[in-house]
Image 1 (cartoon, rainbow, N blue to C red):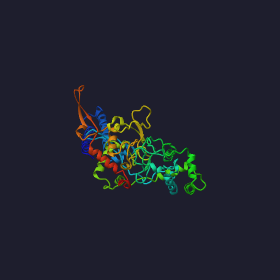
Image 2: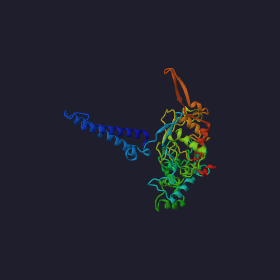
Image 3: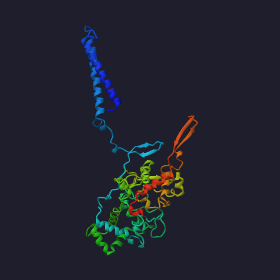
Image 4: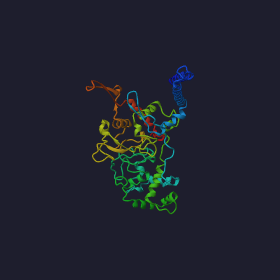
Length: 430
């Protein structure tokens, strides 16, 4: 019980004692004449007052002594309410105060109609590597999504298909795509199965004329018969739906829950160095987690907060404009100033450059500068004194203080260090 409340109860008890003494004297006739009847009237009023005051003191004492039983049940559960922002000493909006960092699950979720099985995964891996899914037998899924040396990408600015001509967009990594609720840069596919149907028919990628042509290609290879029978049951026909189900089942095994970040949030304090930990705090405090949230660091994921799309406001950023990030508008309507894109995962981001939908940024530090100035409307400067700038207001005949979000060179370096900690050890040395 705090000191102020103890003083209140002490004074209250003293007042009750004084009033009780007055009531006794009143009833005995020392304070009011009995012949007028006033003694009993005043006594009754004083008595009820003492009772009411005593009840209030009991309630106050109860609420202060047993907060867990009386007050706590009336308060909202912080774990069930939306995170709230808080302000730092310099006036910044420091992002969600109660943000909870979580590791990536060890197993990716699978839809009920396509459970992951060893036979299906083995078949899917073979199909993923097979150039028979392209018109001229030169391109496979792995051509743009090298799951080994290139961390699930081709490390080109934009993908190159059977024509040898670079396409319009960068090839995202296939690692951890199993956790994404939206696929492709514009998020037009809602599952791995749906996504896998796109590239084979795209004339600039694999160039097949139809799903039937793909089915005929696979049926013509005798050894595929056994693989499909093992995966889907004897006698089941080879169809495009089963082809993409097998590929998706394989892709659901391509997850990396073993990054230093995962070890850190699971309890290993040595998994992140000081710069990475500071970068982790900055990632939250400057607002990166507002979009890149949850264990997969993407609002377009099956796990974590659902916020699949965001405008890339590159037009207001010097860094964004220099990389021509507004030419392709993604999901944005015709005439829009900036594009709208699916929020990509940042898992293994240090190993999956070049960055953005057009692959125009090759350096991760530059990518952070682009995002800080475009999305957070921040400035990149080592002049930290500019965070709070006094501006004279003639109307108020006084100064207003403008607070700016400024990231220093060290801030950018530490955020990049943290992003490196999202990269699996298998890619970190490449």
